[in-house]
Length: 326
Image 1 (cartoon, helix red, strand yellow):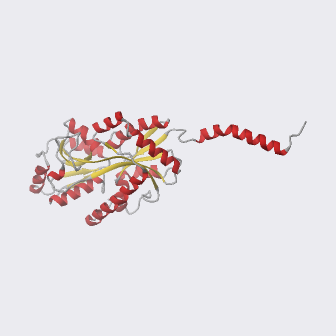
Image 2 (spheres, one colour):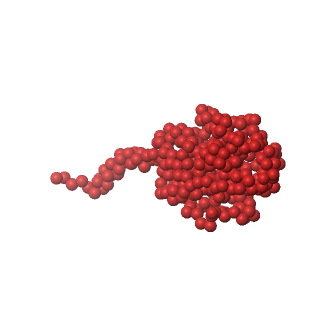
């Protein structure tokens, strides 16, 4: 058999490798399998509904399905732990809220995730506020009435949150301080469980996210006393802002997507751009607006800037109030 010179073998091997290269790169291209989006909240809550709505459109844009996985509990810590400690391969993301990175680090002595070095910011999802809602039979219909009732019955009114140190908890503590009233805090494992008891008049008031509160208010299951945004919400145009009764009071929140630290920069950039483009789709924007959501896609740097700014603000309040995890 005629032997092929060594140098010719090398040439043939290189040509074969070049022929195979497209297939190899096609297999390695991201994404080439379903992407998991962990939501640190219960199924059916505002963040979960929003993640599924956005994820459906985002998955179509990326060419792979987005599998939304709700993991509630411990002020979002359980879900954040699961997402941020996953393999940094670009197939697990956290669809979370600002509390995870700006409040929890000041409340919990030890977290199972690193809110500074263990994360890779991807994109903002939305900015918004909260709605101060009340049970259907409370003897007041606005913030002034609530404050008057609370002053006449110190400690009798109960308010719910989805955990000690959560944004609704800190927001109500700030309102108590500003209004000079005393309410009893009743922490719940999930916001949905708290809403069930609120509608059944087992508790009286709570701050809820816009996405969760708007449908409840529209259905008449709860009363809307005020919104915490700087201006009235288009989704609830007749509901006053809280600062109309308590001057200067605002409570804003935001949702964002993070990846575990170590995810390739190219994947983070591609996901960020895909999210930004998805949030510009007119039909999606309309559906989000109907839920009271203001879409806010952004570059990763904006998420980092907001986190740094708000962490300093909430850290100061938490230290002043001496709030710690249960």
